[in-house]
Image (cartoon, rainbow, N blue to C red; front, top):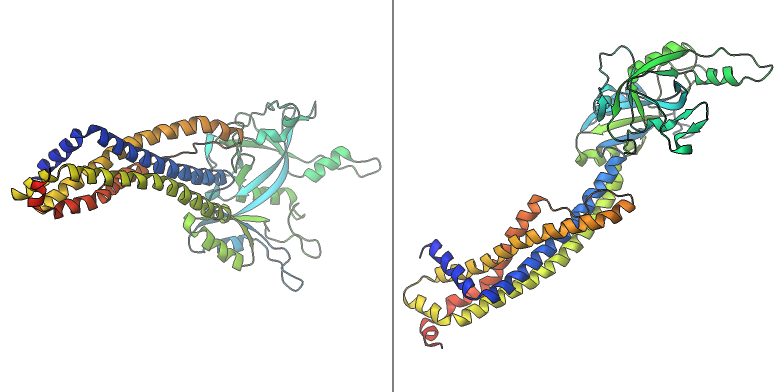
Length: 447
């Protein structure tokens, strides 16, 4: 007997008992929808956790801090260009960059702001997500800024002395079309303005005009790890500071015991970018063994993921119980079908129908029930997921969490249908084997 003939017979048998088939399929629908929705909630929680951590820093980045005091008898452990270069040679490190934080005063019109210029490598600049303008080029000879989308909050109106937080009015600072006048020697600036009577008068420091190359992507209220920073090429920043302070100590830089500046820069912080999330912990351990303090989002994310996996396993188990109950329903339906079709089975055996065909026919019926239940269950799952995201999303937004809490990837839909078919066939296996073992003569005499 051809497979197509067996398929047609199986479908016709299901159609003859519509109510029983519908109720059995309904059980599979509920079971499939339950397990898919439960797993989708686990996936949504896991992905939302990763997205939240990613807002505060790249998941493949490691922040490194120097240990100035390694103990009474130990030499200070400084972050220098040579040390950062050594970081870049660690396996799986994509690149390493020092971070030179230097505080300046920036002016534009009546607005004044205290900004931290972050000198970083060209590789770091190339990784910034630009929403307007362009990235500075490695061939630039003049320092250009990459300004975060929330930097405007750091400016105040010098006439009213009000910041953004005082009246929630955005300062009228045009970064892209107007230059900023930047004061690097902030000590001289304050001394020239606020010198007391009898103190030596200090000349106002020179202002430098800096243009903005680009703005970090995002709206005025969209926070990300770069939204409050002002980034420049570190080599141009170092050259600028050397030009301004010459042989005098640069503010924020370490000096020797005689108060003299070192002939190299010492950084408070550096950053390593790993080529894959899988190796972040491994690289971080190497850095810790070198004596440096480190921080990465992965060390917290791994702990959170372990908790999420436990939650997902519990949710999936709850849904699996529903599908298990549906499997019992399929087995019951197939057993009832065998009892009702005992004479039909006996006739098929007397006519020489192979045992394998009888088994296949019942497995097809059970698998078809699983297929119908799985497909309709997936449609129901997407509907339930939409309702959860639509109404549950309001509550999530009130807690400051954005995104869909229920997420059904395509692979989950496909696996759910295959699993429903598999469960149906497993549930129908015992009844199919029983049908094979029926005695033909006893089956024919059955009323």
